[in-house]
Amino acid sequence: MSSVLSAVNRPRLSRPSWLSPKVFRTEVLAGLVVALALIPEAISFSILAGVDPRVGLFASFTMAVTIAICGGRPAMISAATGAIALVVAPLAKEHGLDYLIAAVILGGAIQILLAVLGVAKLMRFIPRSVMVGFVNALAILIFAAQVPHLLGVPWLVYPLVAVALAIMAGLPRLTRAVPAPLVAIVVLTLVTVFASVAVPTVGDEGALPDSLPTLGLPQIPWTISTLTLIAPYALGIALVGLMESLMTAKLVDDITDTPSSKTRESWGQGVANIVTGFFGGMGGCAMIGQTMINVKASGARTRLSTFLAGVFLLVLVVALGDVVAVIPMAALVAVMIIVAVSTFDWHSVAPATLKRMPYGETIVMLATVATTLATHNLAIGVVVGVLTAMVIFARRVAHLVEVTSVLDPDGTTRVYSVHGELFFASSNDLVGQFDYANDPETVVIDMTHAHVWDASSVAALDAITTKYAARGKTVEIIELNKPSAHIHDTLAGQLGVGH
Image (cartoon, rainbow, N blue to C red; front, side, top):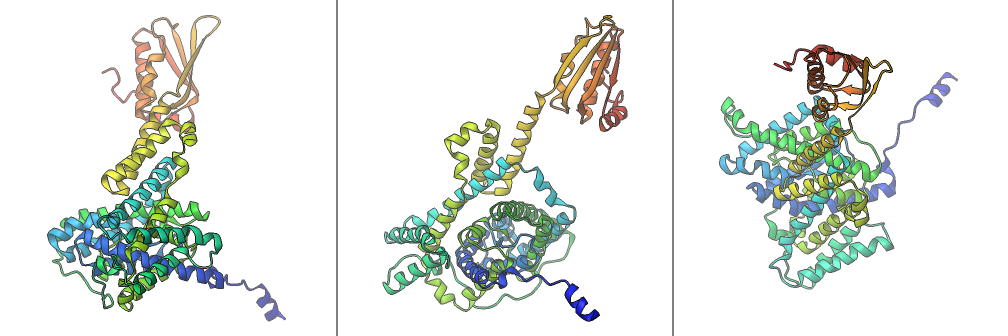
């Protein structure tokens, strides 16, 4: 009897959602579409970094497979990226591939350290306007990256792109059983192959590998001078990779309406870069374009799609390289155009939205977009956007401090009441709101509705008391809340005001 009861009370193991036939099919097909889209991107980023295409392709495989296991955001795609390529390109050009690989491994270690220190918690300080600017800049960069594939090409490329766009726009209205991007790629490939149409193909982008990646260590001197050389590049890899990955993870959270562990994603990125380095890859981070293909265009929601994207990529380029090589670039360009259009937040630039939105929010969004487009670096764009938001916020809050006063009926005491947040921006105007010459002998400053945040505010209060003291008048500051009283009691009279 007891064995029966224990069996009844034993908790059931939850079944992974991807074991459902419908979900499994969606995840498998999504992984295949993403793998196809990763190939030309990885080759292009390898060229940008100044290394062999194999380095980028192997990096995309190891990043995707590792992050599928270690990452904190299911369905997000990580692989070789343009941002990381820009960081490591000077190192690869001047010192070679081995130094690049060493920088990638060290960068991964730094990412793990930053994860332990709680860097993911800094995401809360990124305003929505910066997120909107990040998304819009990304969409523009994705579209701009397709333009070179549409210039100086045979005229047949344009109708092929148009057909692919039509398939991806119309097929979802009929059925979502098969991802529209995959159908577009298959249809255009069959048309160009059987009709012997001469258009640029994936094979024209660079040589595909014909062997599996191998495990090894970079052949470099393990000295302090080497560490000094690669450390700045490693730090760049760590910061740029984490920022893009965490921003992308937050975006996927919003799209799927599901939470994710940003701390796990942070150290997962570090583990993925270390693994990638040991397999001779160029490192990487989350890819917004391929993630949008996976999540929005294909409907993937689990780690299986990310894992299979990496596996399919390796199988396609190693075992089926000849087949992949004949895929027309027009098909992949069309897929990325759809991704760019669907990624852009069109509501943010609608006239009605701009009319209602505070001008400061719009400035932050435009600053993020403009900086990103100018530098081709999403991380720099986000930093500039956050700094712009901080300046605008400080200016806005600086004008929210109000001082009112009443005179006691006997005329011997004036009570000033301060309302608002006192910090370096708002406290500068505080000193000028008191009538030092005409006030009575006793002045009371009531801080019930105020909060003191920094030394600048304490210095302002010291300046006020000093001005009254110079006229033989006394000042009493009352009703400071506990944190304000602590900083005031600690610093009052110690800041050199009046000296």
